[in-house]
Length: 363
Image (cartoon, rainbow, N blue to C red; front, top):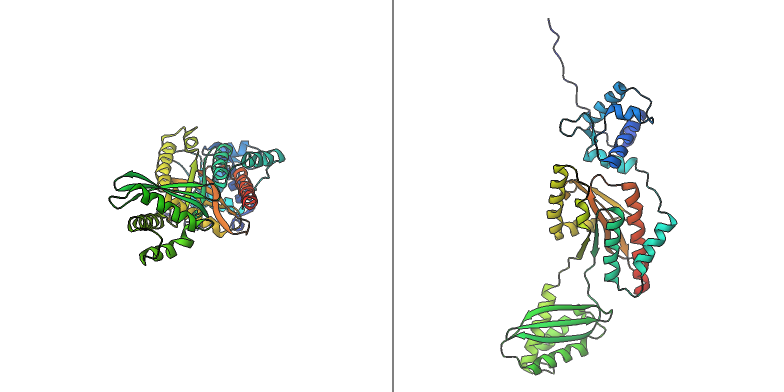
């Protein structure tokens, strides 16, 4: 009588790296590190030839099978080799990743590129995003806070019978332009009068600080304006206040780098999906805002966060703060899960610190 075969029970995935045996941990670490370095599946024969693991290919295969059943490794397509799963990468990052330190020259280079003379904060953040993209060979990301600078000048410029351009100049040198709808028949004098009225009352204050009081004053017809200019002020402030979202801005630099050195059609398709995800900026901003909850670098791997799919990609992000140590934004990189985490983590961390220091010096 043939003995009935009982299927092997599925090994539950370890919740912590300490639950793996020392041999399994060493093999797992080597597989992940090799994959992050080469991007290729790793087989038992390759591991046995690397010298770091003194086991036969057969013994290594047994351990790899156990790691695969535990959900930490998987075989792409019909390859004999294995790559880490998303769960495996998370376990590696949380328990085995050895983060390197930036060299003195690298630190000086980051500081020099960000501190180059006379830049305002927006220029520094754009440069930081470009810098991280170049250093990491990924896309650089910066989430900037909602801007509400103290104003020094407001001007209305007629564009057409029912449209006008509002120009707001901040005391920090920033300039914002916005097109608004205007009442019909406004003379040029109404534009000048409205601009002078707002400039006089807004100087040194933010838009939100004066918006409500001025609108109330205009509505109550106490403003020193004629009816047409009052309508223009109301339209301008309402349009600006209504369109200014509490959602921060997103700066993305270096997306083209994600297309470099792609050898497989599957990789290219994942990057294309990542581009689609990046276009949905509000979703990405919400995910990056989660990095504000931690003091240091935060790593999001693949689709482990339901808010944003990342198309099988990873984000490494760190918050930056103002002179009051209040977190005001996030900087980081996005790329394939096969990132050089050990190098990029300290890079992002140090860049965030430099930005915090520069913001404190400029405010």
